[in-house]
Length: 396
Image (cartoon, rainbow, N blue to C red; front, side, top):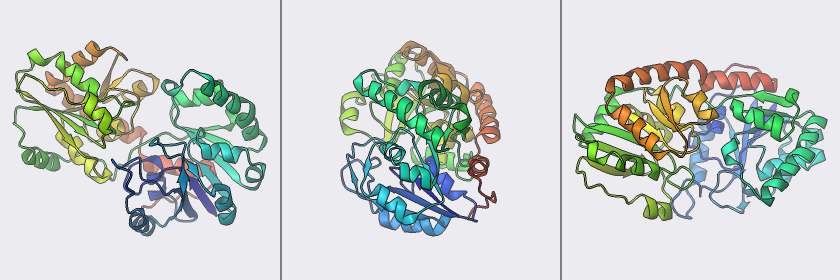
């Protein structure tokens, strides 16, 4: 049995869904990843990383095959990159099952428009799209027309299936894209419990290395530093508290930065000497648990992020903006603030600064909640069952 996963961008060192699907796939079938040759999403410049070396190590470790295609229209977004030779390569591999990640991507649209691919392969798609990502305008209208009049009808006609990753995008698939309910499956985003665990020793080592005061509080942000994730809102929210801060407060921003955004929004200084802002470049996914174990709480001020699940399972409370998906993910282990309300964000930050016992309580509840509901090992087993594959997910 040959299964090909199409992911327009793939990096062996990152912690996206496809990385964990590869790690925990059942050994009884062939697992291949078809992707682009671009690493621009994860690098600060246009220089490409040595993906060939990284790929070989990943392939050997997890018994997978990675096919990289030249790409076009590479705009530093996770999807909507054109894979040159996509259809030809699929035909040459001739998989039994084709799993196309992100229904809204160019690759998905190209496959949906190919009656031959639809009829010759068992097709699965997934979606990660949320309501806050929809935009107004003609482009959006054309996209929705395609989904309703072309994609949904072909998915039904050729028996393809689509995985939702949160209840919110299940609703989008059914009510907005008009995909029949019996064509929709569920496979939630999760976290890797073999990578993300609370480790007090590692946390203490980082605090010592960073020369942090014992009575200080560490507020952590991890992820891209750009105008979609809006980490500058943390600085603005803390500015509203500046006069109240009477002990060290360390604001850590860990991740790759869009330099234009950083120069424009992340240079804010504080007159209160207790407040320090520090930047750390993007780290390998295997290093992040140490930072989550070191911090007192995390703030993810905009949109949704997989990092919140990783942080929670490391006993780190999180603050996120209130929307359907975030409220579900912080059922335990965090709090939400009213979207667009900077003062509410500020007060939620102040609440956790002044309630270390509540942070500990939220952290322990969050770890238990994530372990019970978002373990990738279980998620992959259930996904493979839906694909009709044998489940024997022993880590390779």
